[in-house]
Figure 1 (cartoon, rainbow, N blue to C red):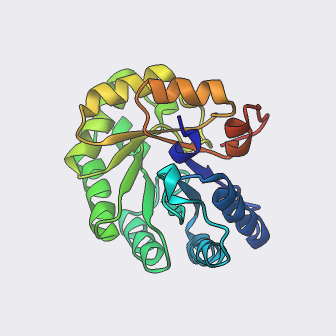
Figure 2: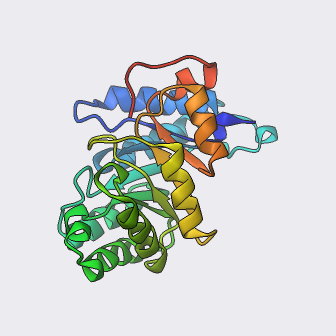
Figure 3: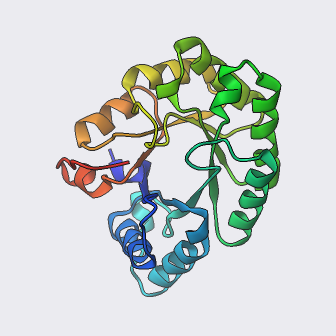
Length: 235
């Protein structure tokens, strides 16, 4: 298995500097990660850094089955999901215009907990529309939901046209679990994919989540995972 091809190499810390983003992109190129996941203010920088890296022959070969240039994955409404829907849409538009290939948006968890499903569905639909065809992953924040709400969040994401449902931001309680991934995979029933994120710090965990049905992993412990080590920190 080419484990690197499942990974969005992630850096979402508030203290991340431009130099940190440069390093993240170089690591993604050298290790063959599927993408880099950054905050929206770094969409352009990540895009430019990856393009420059490939032009300098830092890219990986096609025989591995991975695209030469890792995707730029940008989070919006992150990490709380409580941003105005219109603000998420505006952030999405600018992110795509400045280099984002994929968008990871956080649902308004409080609205889901209150039973306002129309609000949640419209929130996701608005981001999907703003992304103009770029894949949209919907972070449902599994650590804050019971099983019934996890199922409903996934159903709403499918109804709204999302490409993926995703477990966690890594900033709220909880982390990606095999049980949650299995539940999400069963719920979406092939209508979208599942990204596992939050607390993935070692190869064994990564492989277990893929075995459960995740087709993408979000982690800042990417290098430790592909090298077989363990990171004590990680998104």
